[in-house]
Image 1 (spheres, helix red, strand yellow):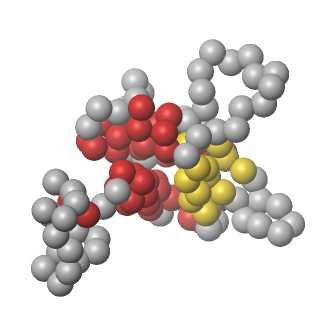
Image 2 (tube, helix red, strand yellow):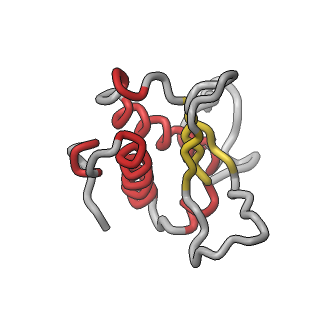
Length: 130
């Protein structure tokens, strides 16, 4: 429940799950998944920044049949590597929070498998191809 009936104040502090927005819940799950995957490969991929965008910007000549769920941006002279997750397409494909967590794990593992040049099964033990 949200709104005045739910309440605010010291009895309902910020960060309580019922007070989180969908975007905040997504960020929490994405960070948890990212930490679980990246922690095993920090020596090979370094510090990877996690970014979340609402939707991807699709170029005019896009010919793929699906919308991208994530994008890996390599290190540049001015910034480190970054994994960008597209929140709305990911949420659209997940019915529950557990589905979202599973989908995020799949997407993050597959992105890093490509970066590392190894099979996704080797990136994270919890990975299951769909």
